[in-house]
Amino acid sequence: MKLHSDHYEFPGGIDPLTLTEKYGSPLYVYEGETIERQYRRLAGAFSVPRLRIHYACKALTNISVLRFIRRLGAGLDTVSIQEVHLGLRAGFKPEEILYTPNCVSMEEIGMAVELGVHINIDNLSILEVFGHEYPNVPVCIRINPHIMAGGHTKTSVGHIDSKFGISIHQLPHLLKIVEATGQVVEGMHMHTGSDILDADIFLNAAEILLATAMNFSELRYIDFGRGCKVPYVEGVISPDIEELGARLSSRFNAFCQEYGRDLDLLFEPGKFLVSEAGHFLVKTNVIKTTPSTLFAGIDSGLNHLIRPMFYDAHHEILNVSRPLGKPRIYTVVGYICETDTFGSNRKIAEIQEGDVLCLKNAGAYCFSMSSNYNSRYRPAEVFLYQGKDHLIRQRETLEDLLRNQIEITSF
Ligand SMILES: *Cc1c(COP(=O)(O)O)cnc(C)c1O
Image (cartoon, rainbow, N blue to C red; front, side, top):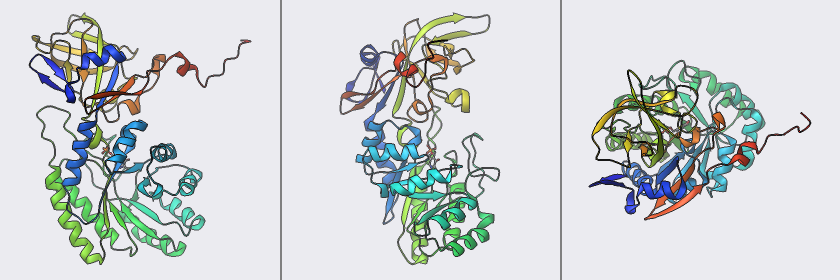
């Protein structure tokens, strides 16, 4: 969405205010062109014989978004059996899907085996049981390289205290299990969280992964996990995916030479592909002044977009109705009966009650983390592509809130 003299426009000249009139508020809007651009940028950053980009779909799982991303040529990274089902429903082939669960039951892993998707295992005890039950099903191993990435502790998953992956210090035990069960290890995986801003730190983790990979002779792919952090704050430089791509490609090609075979290089971006494509349009219900603060209260809350409250995430906020107004300092809050602050002390063009605001970077982990808290409906989702708007999810209704409830009428 860009400012055109006195109003905002989505690609194809679509006016955000027309969308909120047509579909109501609050409203999630995704730009297909931005997803396409990010995909091409990532794909173009690598020069290796076989690159596969797996979309980490927990970021945004709308079935139409999955179909759109499949058409771009991506595979899928899934973390639950339900995401596997959604991926298959969207048309991904089982062999294009990697299932990377953490702390799930053996029963669920069995279902994924039945569906024919690739299995990523991140725990020695599961590996052992799996090897006995399915000695002929190849597995991918998720290692934990113990790299502490910056960013928030809730999104940093590769450090020593993390619950994810098999510790590299457990390699001797891992090798014993693989030898005893005779299972084929087809992939090596790590996911360090996407908050590593520094290519050097990432490449150090990659060295650990590649060194571990040398212990397995039947590999077909190496999965470097993560996406790439996206700049949520205006002015913070986006990490240089091109530099990372060039350095990792040359290191990976050298590794393949040494290994004796070309392997697939996998990447699993979630937010890199969809974050910037998403916009959350909300309406201002009230302007409220207290002795200390000028509040704008909107028709949404942590039930629809929890990242600011959960991760201290920053989402830029714009006044779409009156972009050229004199800037004032607002604290933008939701309507939930908890403190749900979207942004404190933000400079925003003067807001009047009824104005539509836009929270930017709302494509990843926004709708997918939404809930019905306070018995509110989840918003509608609209997908824009080539100048057309497509409703891809209806706003919920009271029926949706009651759907699985059993009403005992004699009470
Ligand atoms: C969440 C996740 C990703 C994607 O993370 P982003 O930060 O959205 O890029 C990739 N791989 C795995 C295993 C994940 O759990």
